[in-house]
Image (cartoon, rainbow, N blue to C red; front, side, top):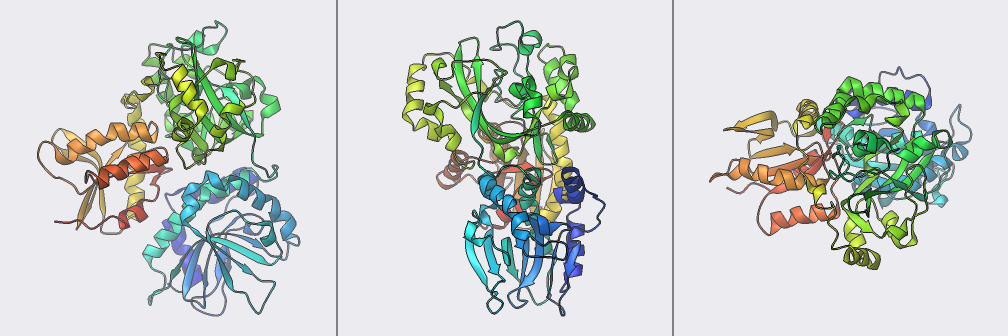
Length: 562
């Protein structure tokens, strides 16, 4: 294909079944504007023949725009996103309109580490005789000096155009990159009009849990006060805050008590939270995790999310998890909607500390659920950790964390209990939903000669998904619940048995897939397994119907040696 209209039409076909399929519906819901558009790229600008022109989504002049186009004298094709700081017929103040969005882009960019592999460049159209593309390097914050009328700032990829024009592989890659950018696009829409600054953290208490807050763990360790919901019912709605398998349009929805106690004051606002919990059995306090930016829901939004959870079967799953503990399942939904869901956040904004980090009681003296408190100076480093690093490892290197560990090393706390298996019958619903989605998307995200099959039989066992290609077989184990560390720990033994027990070699590559992006220590561990022991095991994470990055990962695999 050489025509920009044909390419835009091909992208429309390829985005079916991906998050981008709902682009204008999502945009309409956030912007409160009409959403009945057929083509993703409604604004198409043909120039003077084949291999020319560009296109972007309707309304993209006033926001981060999804953008495709030919460039470099028609020898290359780009796909990605841009800030086009240029005037239009109905758009006379581009700097004024886009500056707040660019500042928000700078403030939250670190929450999207998956974009680090894309390239950024800009063109300054104020100098017509130049109009040269100026490379910036990997995606980074945009300096104030570039925020001027006439500047076009782009990030994504640019590929050479082959003799036959743009083929299916480029279309597939373009859709994958656009889906990679899409969560950031939605976050910027959500935050339009908010103050463009990095958020200050506040400390919030959540109820005790021994399953890394992915599902209820039972009454043990819960608060002793008879007035608390968790003491009355044996669980708290915070216990699902770490379950990233139930996303609605790219967001994790959950419950944090201070937002409920002061809902009217917080509704519609954005906050950053450092979470802690108290094991009432021992009295030990633990840092549980951090959320680098939550949005507080209003009652209407909470009701819509509850309906979506019911439609997907997730509310029933939550009831089953509570019922399995011998508790009253009616307490799950027998409550107001904002007492079920009152916050939402992008999954990449969540950092659970695995295991939780103990700290002295005096560091956070108030233990009320309904208040937000200042972060203790001794623990401010937990809020400074980049989203793509290992929070616990960095904490462990600090004097404060070492002292806390030494002071409480005799406490029979539940840090080891957080390593409980994340399996169970209630996981089957999510796993089936993942498999159904992946049977569609893997055929798009992988080369055409790679054939996926679900529930591949191996004697009495079944591999969740097998990928079969002429030169390679891959076994994929899906684990919809748990931190990457937990998921790797649980899935590794299963895959080893499927592939090699008792004396066989049934596949060439092992892939573990969980709901969360891996941390530095997870990647380091698997690298050691591959390089030191020769075990071909890898980890990727699932997000909204896709295994993120699987196309690039598959193409980068070393050749199979007979």
